Length: 218
Ligand code: TMP
Image (cartoon, rainbow, N blue to C red; front, side, top):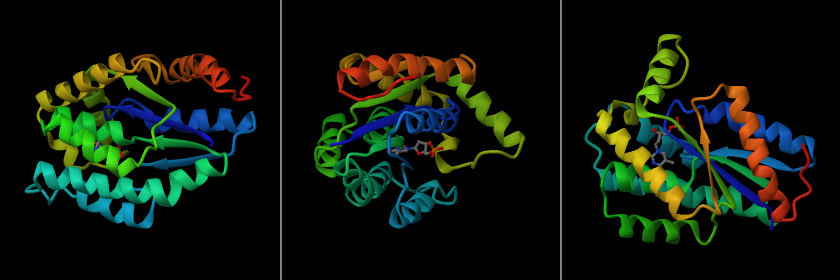
């Protein structure tokens, strides 16, 4: 069985940059890295992603939203993630099931036990060995996103149109999950520069990789 690492964080936390940096470092030490993302990562998942992100779908209920994220995840786990792990590869995923617990559970306030139960069913025992959470105050994340939009970078999606309180609940949810499972979660201060974040991730990942018997060396 291979190695599964997920990245989590609010929008604007720099996940995309950091995931690419980590992929490069892991490849350099011999990992067969597959990069993927949620929602999406498969042809079906990408179609679901456009429904979820379409700003015209303002009437979508929280339940429909959760089930669409779950459908994309069900496809990704079976078509992409599990086969690569079974071949002994390394999967880096830009968001995974914890995003649904944070955004639909804590953020939308769907019943947390029910969200967790459906998520367990959907992921069929595929749980990240390590979840790298890029933590950032909500205001800083939103300001970074606004700056990216002003520079015509980054896609604007339906989830960008929520009140501040929503993102605060999401962040609190992430921190709560990280506290509950410290052996899986690496909380990284994402207010640092991109280079510092990259270095912190690499340093903090080493003991975890060694413990798991991985031959990773900086
Ligand atoms: P991103 O690709 O820019 O990270 O955008 C994905 C958006 O979808 C982001 O706002 C978080 C949201 N999301 C959820 O609300 N629930 C989920 O389960 C996932 C995977 C993403």
